[in-house]
Image 1: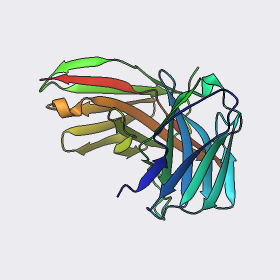
Image 2: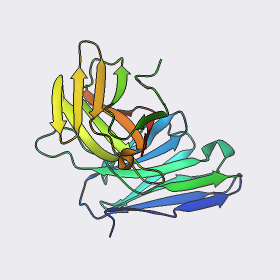
Image 3: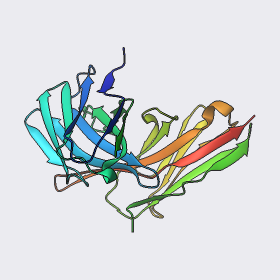
Length: 116
Length: 113
């Protein structure tokens, strides 16, 4: 089984609808992230959470909200979807260990979201 | 100006060629430098990382960091068709409690058999 799973994998919705993307991980990591990926813009950080009680905005949080239900679960919501939120969304986890170092990010398979 | 700049490609090379992928950056606070590989329809996966300046080698891959020039490189020797993917550089800093983990836009590489 994959360590980081995302549901759904594909979603088509209409402008104004509320959408939730879910992420689960079995890696036991404390840190979780939501990114969106657009052609030519690369990965942009939406929100990140260093533990269940710690949630922070990333570069592009407007129009998004998150919920960290447990160490293993981190959900991203679009309260009222708009067409320019059409993108590939990735969840990632990391474990900032005692050695510090890279804070390697482990990514899920992505959710392709289309807002019409 | 973006903090991290990366040529999007695509870069097409014949099998067996040496590939050079590069990123430049502007923030001198970056301390950790990573290369991720992303296959089509998959999430990125870590390929190499380097702390501060210097070289690191792992099999056919070599990562170089030149902090004085704010320039990092990934070299792939004896490139294979299976190396065809998008390569993303990434950089991390933690300054004054502010967490930064920035990705480049990625370079698409095609290795032709």
